Amino acid sequence: MGIMMNNRLKNKRLFFMLIIFSTVGCQNTPINDDGSPTPTFLTNTTVEKPQPSDSQSLKKGPFGNAKTVTSKRPTQRTCWNTSGEGRVFILAVGSNMSGLTETNRDAARFAKAMRELFHVRHNRVCVLANAYKEEFVQALERLGDSRRVGADDLVIIFYSGHGTQRDDDNNDEKLDRLDEFFGTYGPKPRTRYLLRDDDFSALIQDIPTPNILTFIDACFSAGLTKGKDSKERVKSLDGTIPSEGRTHVGTTLDPVKGVLLSASMENQPAVELARRGGRFTLFFLEALKQARQKRQPVDLLTVFEKTRNNVYQHSRKHSEKVQVPVKKGPDEIFRRINGYIP
Image (cartoon, rainbow, N blue to C red; front, side, top):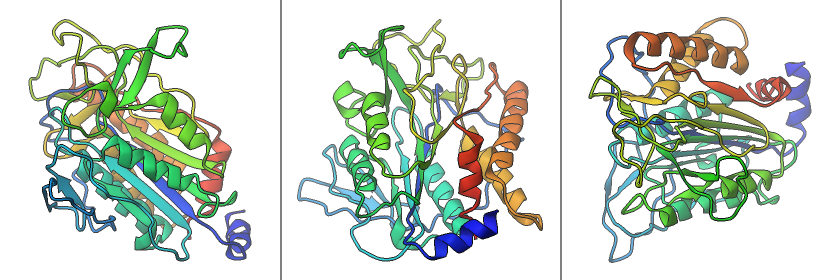
């Protein structure tokens, strides 16, 4: 079936959009962990270069062309400014806010792994290190442009960073009266600098293809949990509720089109491992690497299922609370995605 799909796709203009969100959820300090995999992926992924103004200060980052933003004002980075052929669009977003240190590396590694898996051209990959809300929104809007993306294209979305909850101010959350937000980069963790999940879901809905894989390594909760180990960092912002004595509950995002892979279940933290990266991201990349070494086609659903088990077992051994990744969406989309792998 994969061969038939590949032959069919050769006769069509195809864009593969890979948007990877890796948010290290609900954690404030990294876990030192000798048992976690250390990925071998290097970071050589194409990133649109910012156009700094006089008030901006940029320095070369460790991820190829990626830039580390030191200004407190939004940059002018944009994605996919050049035309060309390509089967895959990759948007990978990181945000090293409030104690997180590895989200940009998560995004770059994941983007590189997907680019190699699907043979994506560099000019179809966008990695935004320390992405501001405006940059994130603009990138998603460009993916929603039917002149770039067609109905037969594939989009994968990756985000790594904090998540958080704030009081619902538009009366769309009937149960818990809370809205979820992505912890996008900004001078302070204030609501105006964050991306609301309602808006994120609407932007995903506007992408003109049903073939969308969203990967989120984050935690969206009302409080902050610190593990017994002070080196454990939970990827969740909380600017209003004291962290001591609180637990994270409700990591629920609004539904999104396609398949959503989340780092943890509703009442669980998602963790960043010290000097290594998000646990969900690390184990997914390791499972993918092992799958590619076998002499058989890669099945991304199988890769996720192995990742889920490994993350759970690792969290039982190294963390105060377990972490179990979650998949939402039909398996058929995974099968269609597998058909895009050369």
